Amino acid sequence: MKTLYVVLAATAVGAARLVQSERQNRQRLALHAEELHQMWLSEIASDPELRAMWTAPGEPPTEEYARLLHCNRLISFLSVKYRVGLLDTASLRVQARWVMEREVGRAYWTTFGAFREEEAMDRIDRTFNAIMADEHAALVDADAVAT
Image 1 (cartoon, helix red, strand yellow):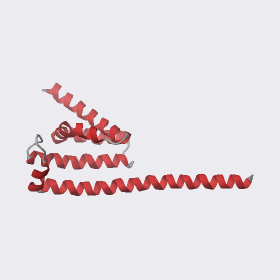
Image 2 (cartoon, rainbow, N blue to C red):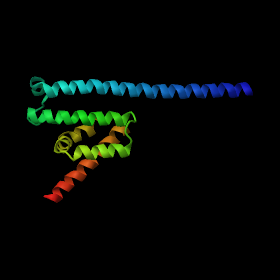
Image 3 (cartoon, one colour):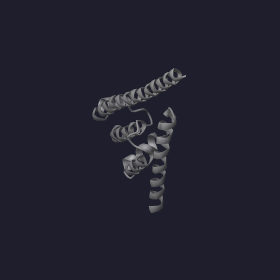
Image 4 (cartoon, helix red, strand yellow):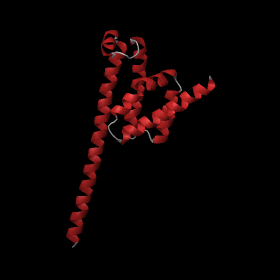
């Protein structure tokens, strides 16, 4: 009977380590993907030819698009920090409010918020988007009342 308990305990410990290892691997992959994404956005934002190539019809003119790309860099960074657990919901809300207090943050979310919601993969993305959208709506409503 003691042997059975030892085997069960060892199995449980091994399974817990596998789960933890998998979670850490996903976090590392998310951070690495974000690193590549940041480099890509930086290239597009700083190179007018690339920016013109990737500006879709109906999107803002290339100079405005460059401003939105810079905002995308920050929002994408916040998204990955939230995904890997470096921001909790309360701290994300503070960061989202800070972004949306800026005109470029509100312009970005107005332009690309729906796209971010379409591309959301899971509950984490949907929660992130909901927080960003809530803060966007709160500041857009505040702007409307002020005018």
